[in-house]
Image (tube, rainbow, N blue to C red; front, side):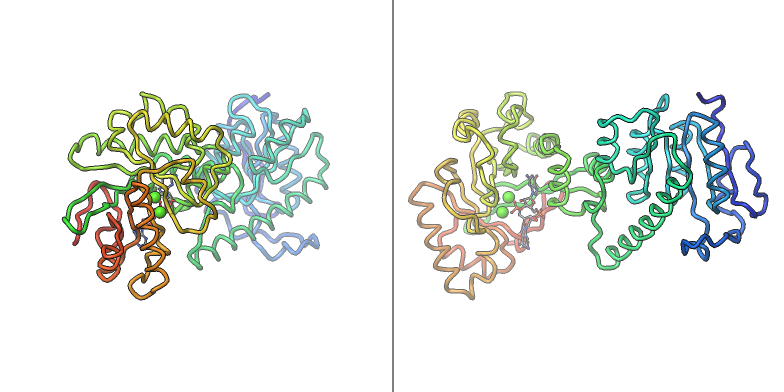
Amino acid sequence: MASSNSSESVHPAGSAGGEQGKDALSTTRIRSRPSPPPVANSGTGRAEREAPNVLVVDDDVTVLRAVGRALRSKGYFVVTAQDGEEATRQIVDHVFDVILSDISMPGIDGIQLLRQVREHDLNVPVILITGEPAVRTAVQALEYGAFHYLTKPVANEALEAVLEKAVRVHRMARLKQQAAELLGNANALGADRAGIEASFDRAMQQLWVAYQPIVDPRTQTVFGYEALLRTTEPSLPHPGAVLDAATRLGRLEELGRNIRERAAAPMIQSPDAGRLFVNLHVTDLLDPLLSSPDSPLASISNRVVLEITERSSLDEVRDVRARVAALREMGYSIAVDDLGAGYAGLTSFTLLEPEIVKLDMSLIRDVHQNLTKQKVVRSMAALARDMGMIVVAEGVECAAERDVLVDLGCDYLQGFFFARPGPPFPEVKW
Ligand code: C2E
Ligand code: CA
Ligand code: CA
């Protein structure tokens, strides 16, 4: 057990002041450490580089010292911490090339530490060590993105081999990140589960809802607003990335609830704002809160249109008809979104019997210059009207598209031409 919670800094052999003391490490010491010590060339190709920083975490001080000594002799710059709390402070203040941690520790354990590490650094490899091997913890460790899982006692050679590899992988990960940033496609979904979880948690906290008007260009009135998910989390830069992260984490229900709660508030406060169009993921249909009177949308249900996309199949939802019937009973309307976006068949029509259809943007783009698109839109609009449905065309970007769509029989229009999505409620340009 830990006898003290001070941290220990172990300098690589030969560095100035390179004595492994029990003195607490200061930020300045690691940041302003002397130029990298001459490192013995171990044949690993690491010699010419700066000594890698390793954080070693173990509540057993004997292990801590022994590992520190062994790594120091191999040219690592070692920082030690005797519990998860101390380690957390270290990872906030310093950048490490690799972290080596015991799994079972009092307080913050190795898995929790791994999750906290990912709040600060999506890439740093974490190697977890345990005294009591158990399949469950091993699986958990790897699922949360541990780089490697070792069982005590760990032979020095094995540890070094894993560390060497971890340092290289980390350098590669950082280069990949730099490349992604350079090419403008930085995205946390390349990260492991703990990394995605950290990004997603931040996204959930910063989540906000943008509104885009859906208008009647004939009367120049606003029919309603579509609520669109937004977050300021840079690693999840568009709604699709947030939805992908939620899917991978099994947290779609939580995301949907968060969006609906935030989307409802400004509409409840503005009784004259018209309809609220809310996008549903197909699995949202399974959420009991959606069809409950406690839903944030329930008090304005007769102003709410639930959009369900044609892009994904309704197969995974049991009792779709019954669920939709219950929602309709509560006052909600249903829209089929992205019609014409390529999903074959008309199951969504027969199952959902929507009040509203939204034509996909791909049909709308340059419709004024494309006779085939005009034919398709005209037929779809006529057919929908025959079935008593309202037709919305979305993605309208210019006056020419607007005018043709009105002629082709679309009831309402939506798109950047009228207004970009924004905080409640964007002004409309006609
Ligand atoms: P969507 O439901 O088809 O939403 C319309 C998308 O088109 C929005 O992109 C909107 O910003 C964009 N848009 C509107 N007018 C124009 C235009 O004139 N030109 C162009 N190029 N784009 C236009 P956004 O907000 O990036 O959303 C993308 C997709 O993410 C949505 O497509 C929807 O499938 C999904 N999504 C967004 N918010 C939510 C949400 O709250 N829940 C769920 N489940 N999905 C959402
Ligand atoms: Ca939509
Ligand atoms: Ca759409």
